[in-house]
Amino acid sequence: MLQPVAVASKSLADYTHICGRELIAEIRELAEPLKDRRVVHISATAFGGGVSEILYALVPLMRDVGLDCEWQVIYGREEFFNATKLMHNALQGAPQDLDEEQWAAWRQYNEMNARELSAGWDVCLIHDPQPAALYELVPEKAKGWLWRCHIDLSTPNERTIARLLPHIKHYPEALFHMREFVPAGMTGRVHVVPPAIDPLTPKNMALSPEDAAFVCGQFGIDVDRPLMCQVSRFDPWKDPLGVIDAYRVVKQKLPEVQLALVGSMASDDPEGWDYFNATIAHADGDPDIHILNNFNNVGAIEVNAFQSHSDVMVQKSTREGFGLTVAEAIWKARPFIGGNVGGIPLQIEDAVTGFLVSSPQQCAERALDVLKDPALGKFLGRRGKEHVRAHFLMPRYLRDYLLIFHELDEA
Image (cartoon, rainbow, N blue to C red; front, side, top):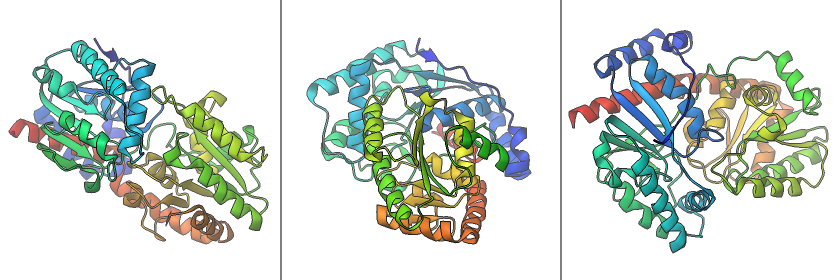
């Protein structure tokens, strides 16, 4: 057996006041014919990244509407996760491909996990490249198969995508965040389905300004001075070094500004600690740069507090599948500055729901605009929150999956 992940229970009815009765009723109607379908989600890790955050909300909601839904995590050791992190970076455009030994490790662990996957599923949902070979190895273990890609495949390393494509192209259904991420050669049905955040988790629920300031103060933030903040994994594609560079430009004109870089360390990201240490080195001892992770006791409530209290939220990615932290921040009505890449422009209409930038200098200029004009920040924050409400909350994501399950039935 693969490792099951325990999840809390959730009720779709609790989202009615946020998403509206019409959407909730549509979901109930779609779910009725799918009652008791056996659905399993397969992912690489149970914590530390956007995939796991989504599944902690999506799986309980699938259960609440009547599906017999489980979430299981694959087995992997260091050599596997080193190979898949390299694969992840290469698929997002890094020049280094896996060597033959690393491809062999990936294949070997897929074969082992395929043996451990139980049979009899109506739908098997495979998340990202780590377990992508399961469908070709044991197609008989589920009636319907979906591959869900959460990463930016717009400019992949051509050698890496050429090696991966034979393992993913025959999935009957594949889901991507954007049309631009779909590699040439997919033979099954392709769906463009952006992910979503759960507004009722501790990370996204409403937090009073006083509570948010109190939590930030515990981490050494001066709550009476302006704060820039980026929440993301410590990863070269998230460009925390570029955020520090932007902050330094802002600080020349606004000396009282502070910066918080807040992230979590994931079990399938062995490179994360190296980049965390590189970020600390780049900060060069500046007492106004606060670099924090889950080993500093930063959990969901603390992230919520930093996002809710910050005067400017940043996600200066250079590649980005979607960027849940974008939707999280603008759901809290904060002015947002994001890299003009991947799934971020889906969430940010430039100068309407936030700002899109392509360099540390641009990021600094937009941050100064917001910090010097609080009314502009309030305008962007309000517009951004309603954009997220309309497009990027979990019930909409659940509905999209139910529609695809109906298509599987008709295939």
